[in-house]
Length: 232
Ligand code: XBP
Ligand code: MG
Image (tube, rainbow, N blue to C red; front, side, top):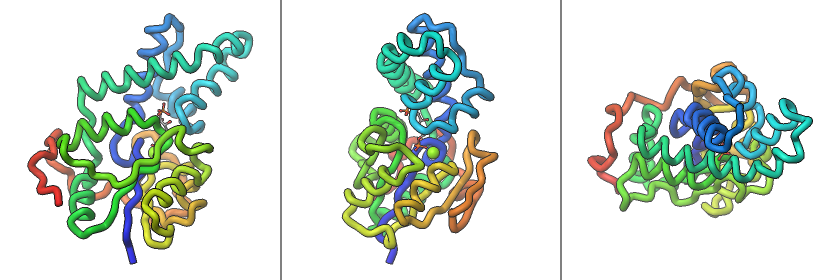
């Protein structure tokens, strides 16, 4: 019996990754680092899950001579990036992908519980939800994010954390993911996975997903705040 839906965030709930890329570039500029991650480079760097880990990988591979000093600054750089991401979402909005709002509303109406299992930092999840749901609506029963999991995707940790929070077995839930690493993570947690590729995962193999769709339903009216939705 299906009792819960567990959603990945970046690329699944919303097309967020290019906003992350822009936020990294703003942080580099703010901190006087002569770096700029273009779309092609960021697509390669996304092989590393986790913004902190992605930044560390970039330092080690592109700036090995200054790695020690740059690693010491990494927390400051990532904190600046997270602030910049929040500012970009607040200024520009960040619409949910097609069908997500409908699926969430229908699941709640049917008494199916909802969770998030994401590699991204918790403040980024909160900002995405604030940009799309009325303040009095908390659509997700459980949010498992970022460093709460001891290992990032493709390890199963964050999905196991979400299942523990829901207090249900993997056999009674379905996971939604956009990336190969995310599918691997959910499968390692024993979850069936419905995959939907996003802008930066168009080339990903979706092995392990029981099905793949281009998106999760009819396009919601663009930039509609969901205040008008009857939230059960
Ligand atoms: C995607 C990620 C995240 C974001 C950046 O997570 O790998 O690291 O790219 O966010 P998911 P942070 O697809 O699991 O939602 O800089 O906060 O890590
Ligand atoms: Mg994702």
